[in-house]
Amino acid sequence: MQFKRLKDLREDHDYTQTELADKLGISQRGYSHYEKGDNDIPTEILIRLSQIYGTSTDYILGLSNQRVKERQKSEKDKIQM
Picture 1 (cartoon, rainbow, N blue to C red):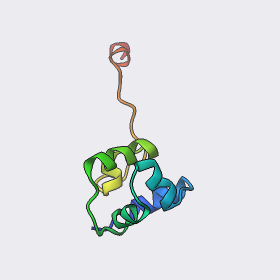
Picture 2: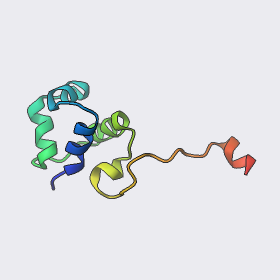
Picture 3: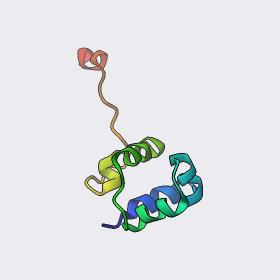
Picture 4: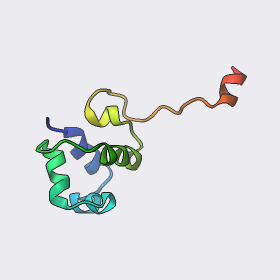
């Protein structure tokens, strides 16, 4: 499975593969394998990518088209409704 959104997100945030791999603590080659779909993305890396990009893991995996995470309503927000 190719993860095209990984490349799109990386380029939108002006990261090189090497820069992003360094942020993730992996090699550039290892990261490249995720982008090309040669390797599955480990859960820990997937979560870290969603944090870096401010998006959901579902978006990265192509399960959602909603790019930005919705802010979860706090208890205070729920009470004011």
